[in-house]
Image (cartoon, rainbow, N blue to C red; front, side):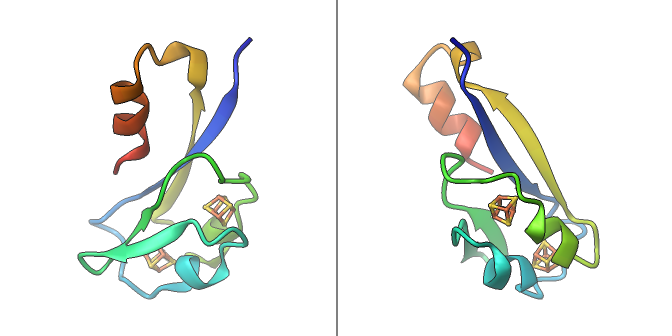
Length: 82
Ligand code: SF4
Ligand code: SF4
């Protein structure tokens, strides 16, 4: 059975580091690393798109990831990384 997960992606070329996505995500998914918001992992994202609504630069995309299409733990962890 496929398990659908959601993976936020922040375009570092467009992001202005305002922090609105970090402050408004209901599950506190983002950390600031190197002055850019980065997801802590893909497991908790609700696909609510609140971060996208707050981002005035349209810098965020939510990608769909099907767990059974990932063949190893390394690939799952690599998929969670930005
Ligand atoms: S879609 Fe919702 S849960 Fe996922 S990162 Fe954005 S605000 Fe957080
Ligand atoms: S809301 Fe948009 S511009 Fe602001 S920190 Fe998040 S991704 Fe960057």
